[in-house]
Image 1 (cartoon, rainbow, N blue to C red):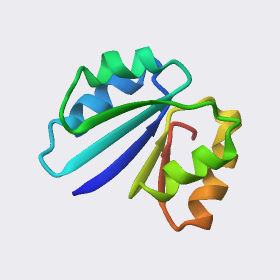
Image 2 (cartoon, one colour):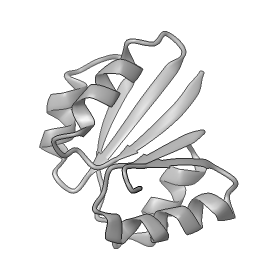
Image 3 (cartoon, rainbow, N blue to C red):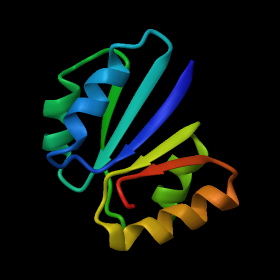
Image 4 (cartoon, rainbow, N blue to C red):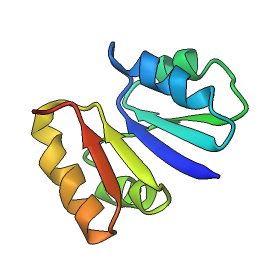
Length: 99
């Protein structure tokens, strides 16, 4: 089973999380500063795990990235470089909303 890490629980996160949770072979970990937002989006789905994450906690962020197959950063663009560097370090796929 593939594991997707979603960083952020803002307004654009719900559609991708719900889509991924509808797939039989994907587990979703949703990490957000405000865990209640992630909990609401996951809505107790058995393949979803909401977590709290302070993006300044480098150790926790790196561990979450290491444990995932794909990382989707829905964080503000100012954090994408930090996340991208960790994804490169651990050879993980990264998707962002930046263009």
